[in-house]
Every structure is written in structure tokens, then in C-alpha cells.
Length: 279
Image (spheres, rainbow, N blue to C red):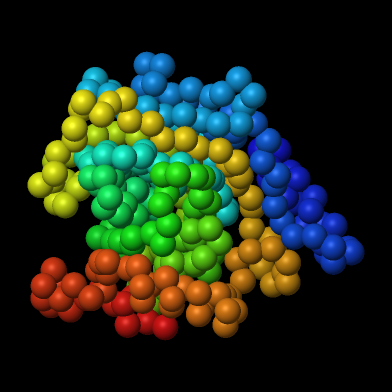
């Protein structure tokens, strides 16, 4: 198993014995855990190993994947998104299983570019056993192109939690016992990419990619993936959100959520999916 998981388990053991630490893995070289897999040289790691850069031009985008697969984990990465006119571009960070597509699991973070001065859209989705259509979209409360910001996916047996700079913005709970598909049996690998989706990414495809701005560049650093602590542990992540975290998520959703499948009655005229009414 990955060194990140080994150190995480050692930390959990120490926490159980001494109550002094929580599960986690310190970020080292970004290519300790990630590897560029496509792009014909458009993806690269800085000589000091701290930054992974993806680029996109009219010929191709680029991408990477994690060296390990995971069955429940928290993944954190800092991303600096494509600046200026990023219309048509999509920068991603996501979990996905590697088995048959018709029963695949996936947890998506996709950053949809926009024309200069207009906000990025963070598009999130959850697939379980091939069932998706659970999109929620958010604008961000900062400019994600001027500095690195931390984006996190927490995937446990209890829930999937998406966080931005530590602020939770979306929770998808495990209601498998009530018939709602939930990714819990297939290992997933982490992927990231920068690619062109001008046919749909920006304002429904009305705004196309301006290739005179190419190459488009996004940067990633400080990647970690940590195993969840044992069930019932008071340390580490994966616990129910406390009142402060719930209030933070309500603030983010009230002010920055721009699409919620649970509110889209036109899309679901026979009724929204059942998890939308589950606490």
C-alpha cells in the first residue's frame, strides 16, 4: 500500500495510544503520488517536484493519475486554475473506478472556464454503479486563478464531502440501505486533466475557446491521499459534521450554489431523486 497510507495508519495507531494526532499524510514531491499519463509533453513536474503543470493547445490537452487506487480516502490538492480567458477549458480532479463503464463509480470536480471577468463554475457530480445525474454547481468566493486553493474530496462509508479551502460545499450521504446507489465496493483512482470542451463547458457552449490564448495552463501541488480512521474513532476525518461545519456549508450553498439537481423539477417532472428528500 502507498506510503501515505502507511504513515496514516501509523498515525491512527499513535492517536489511539496517545490521543495526540489525526490520520493524515504530509505532502512531499507531487510525483510521489501522481504521474502524468497523457499529453505528449504537455504535462510536466517541476524539477523540485513541487508543482505538476498541465497545458492545453489546439492539438491536445494533458492529464495525470494517482499511482495508487483507494477504497475510501480523503484526497486534497491545491490547484491554480487557467487565468484570463479560459472559456471552453475544463480543469478536473476526480475519483473514478476502472472496471466496466456501465457500472462505474465516480466523484467529479470539474472547473468550467469562462471569459475574462466572469466566474469559474465548479461542477460536481456523483456516480454509483453507473448511475449519475447528481450535478451540483457552484461559483467560488475568490479568484481561483491568482493563487493556489485547496480542493478536497472526502469519501467514506458514511458520506462523500466536497470542500473548498476547508469549507464544505456538498455532502452526499450513504443511503444505500434505502435503495440509493452509493460507491462503496469498487476501488477508485484519482485523475486530473485539462481539456477542451467548448461544445458545452462555457455558458452551455455559446462561448467557444479562443485558441489565440493558448497554451492554457493549470497547476497542481501539495497532493495528499489519506485513509479514513477506524469507524468510531474520535480522531481524523469521516465523522459527522459539527454545527460549525454545517453552518459553513449552508453559507456556501446559500450564496454560491448556482445549480442543484434536487431543485430541477423540469428535468425530473415525475419527481426528483429520492435522496433529495432524505436527511
